[in-house]
Amino acid sequence: MKIAITGTGFMGTVHAEALKRLHLDLVGIQGSTPEKSRQAAQTLGLTHAYSSFDELLADPEVAAVHITTPNRHHFPMAMAALERGKHVLCEKPLAMTADETAQLVDAAKQAGVAAGVNYNVRFYPLCQEAKARVQDGAMGAIHSVHGCYVQDWLLHETDYNWRVLAEEGGNLRAMADIGTHWLDIVQNLTGLRVTEILADLKTVHPVRQRPTGEVETFSGPLQSETRTHPVAITTEDLGTLLLRFHNGAKGTVFVSQASAGRKNFLQFEIAGSLGSMAWNSETPNALRLGHRDRPNETLVKDPALMAPAAAAAAAYPGGHAEGFPDTFKMCFRAFYDYIAAGDFTAPAPFPTFADGHREMVLCEAILKSHAAEAWVTIED
Image 1 (cartoon, rainbow, N blue to C red):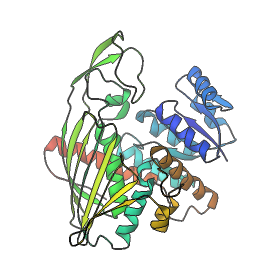
Image 2: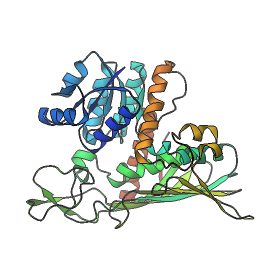
Image 3: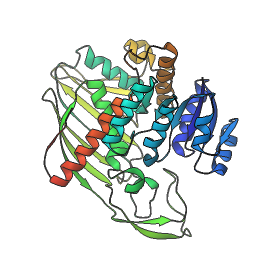
Image 4: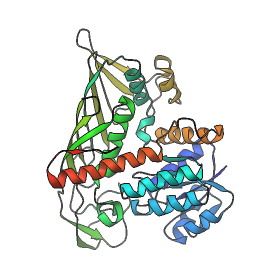
């Protein structure tokens, strides 16, 4: 199977490195211009630099496409790839609206191909361990989930990236960009489904300074000599959600891209009748286990001490740390192992287009709740 990537930015590079680590046959890449395609192909050591997405899709050898472009391109690109019978692994969010994601779910079923969304946080080994402990009843009945996902790369008004523009990324930004990761991981590992949302959002900088040319994600502050012009911003920098789950459990999450000192901090704590668990992405190789009647514990990642499903998500033995790049590798391994097995009626071991659709339904409920300052029920 030969694979190609569309998108040459931060995520495109991450996808390429993970695919190479799995020794998968990544043959080419396509950027927003032919020159960007050539530069990326040369840097990554790939044989094909596609001048356009149409050229990529027309390559009969390419069986799978990874989409790492700005959000507004996800729907048309994914749909075009499905229509060509290609397997698709798309960055999140899957599309800009729930109507679009619903169309993609149907199209993937009609095409009979594998269709995944890169919610890579699921694939931290200790997130898989947390899921196994919920499933075996170690936490008892789950009654609350809380946490956050906070960053600081958009703290200043001079911090800029295409993601801040509604026309490029959608009307919801921080919640759609990183909040959906939190919503996906807590629902996936607890088995609980969000049924109601109350949202309160804030735009810290209604005006930002946009430089000439584009700026890479997480590229740092602009140089003092960089020429800029003001641009109005309608997307949110931060926000808080109150959540109700289908079993009656309650939840809260704070999401921000303007919290100084937090580079990429996702944290959750799950509390049940028999215990609690807490994990965060800045110390991903430790899972805190909370107890009422005996000392608390910290489980440090060690496949020999973990549930089989969690051990399978760990590539290295105890004492050898695993982190962000490894989650992509494990997500992609699950995706391509599933394709190799050939039974697309089997439950998918990776986040699917249906999961991506569910997240977009939640995003639209968040916007609706914030506008109305009221609880919104999530329709199935």
